[in-house]
Length: 372
Image (cartoon, rainbow, N blue to C red; front, side, top):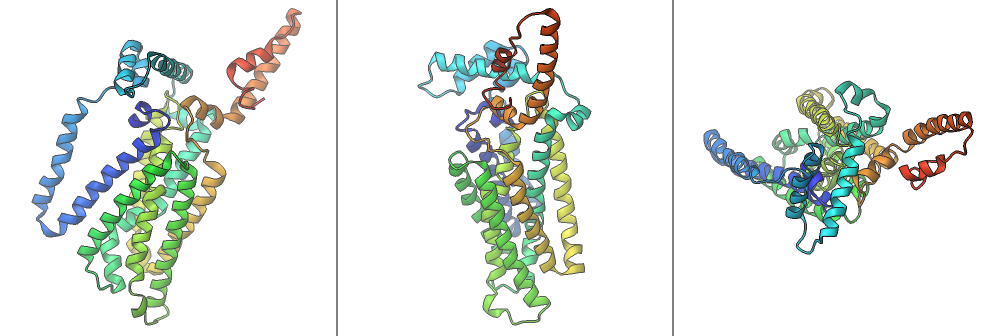
């Protein structure tokens, strides 16, 4: 949420994915050194970064959106000057501040409770999108792969030891996330999500085929013993190109200021719950049905996620927060303006004056966006 509010439109995606890269770096450190040192030493190593972050966060500027919402306009201007590029002009700062003020003013007209967030039609589209992409993120099986990758490799009979395979798995994810950084603001969010989910599905197809041949068909799989490890590598690369990294960006963009904190908290809770359930039931499902059926289920979830992204997720690349909200709520705005039009025309007729409603509609941006 913070990176989405402090970044310019053309940098918002990149900064959002950097947070995912930091997470991957942490995972890689644990996977690389964890098997070879004690739990105490590993805990001390992991403690360094949070302590360092605690110190550095104190020097971070506050979000200009938050400052404007608190009525601290001049402080918001100072933050924009601090965050702006060296060649930013005062006119650019004023324009950016005015844009933030307009966005916050529109968003903060109605303070929102949790119940309103769930039930209000204005937020429904964004809520559905957030649940959908978080479901794709978690039902892709990434939590289960992270938790059981060593056991999966051991079950496959691979010649690579589980310890060293974990290091490989941790290392390949970081370059994939950097690829996402370079592409997210060039090709957009939707293409990355679609390609990523299809790549994950293809990787799972290979895993399912291998474990079916090994455990159900009883075939000799020595010639393709490389497939499970390769499949996990392909999955981790494709997953971090979009399915894991892009939802962080999209979720910071699709909610208005007045409900963003509630929405992201709800989505984080939902995602954490799914992560727990996916990890918890991977082993029982694999034991009951066979690992090939578990991978097949994840593959189906990835394919379903592709259709959800194609038909339900809007492209947010290069759009301001106000533009995103207007496009998300296009149908809602159209119905609202239709009611307002009827009320306005009725009032005009009663007063015996000529209606100026079209000018009013134009001023709201509804005509420009094609909602009327």
